[in-house]
Image (cartoon, rainbow, N blue to C red; front, top):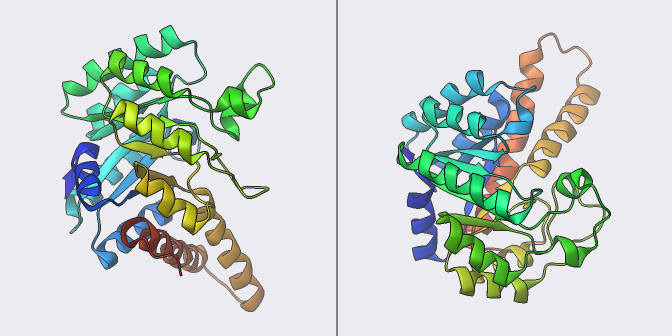
Length: 285
């Protein structure tokens, strides 16, 4: 069932859980997430990130995502992740995406607000939800910055977050409190007090970017402090690679690519199920 981000986040708020939000740049990723969602019978968000355009053009993967969401037995939001250009966001909305993220986090505050407001007005015409970001995450975003950033420079200022939400009227806030995109080289240390204050001051569902690879106890703590959407991709994708390597080592007479693809999809599905167990059941054993 195709739904908006607001609908699934309202459900998450009522249950004090988080909705798993997964990048689905390939059909194998997409099938792994939707099959896990139906098996566990919980809502999910499937995402296409603008940076994945060379891998899977929005015009190709977008309609597939929307159609499979409509067919799903569970509630599925189709979301554009890290949309950096307004025309690209409009393209997603026209394809039927029910939620979009404008990412102006690398811009100055005034420009970020101006573009986010345009995005909000655009999304209203399609009855879609809007996520936006204030603060810079580690990983890709910090590398894109033109200056060397310390942690305190990247973390979201709670008072600025409050002002940003009031200025833009967004539906969900992505903020920086210690996570990073990609594979972690060391265990992330999350600033939970900052997270709590941001949630208290803004009153919005908080989005955790760089969500894969976080300690299970930290997931639960973050959820209890207002995180309602957890973006998850890197470690799911890595499981597909690990499974493929193992499969190729064990079977040296593979004839068809689809055998590899199916095996990778099954491994990623297992990882999604593990993540959903924590996000929706808050089980950490």
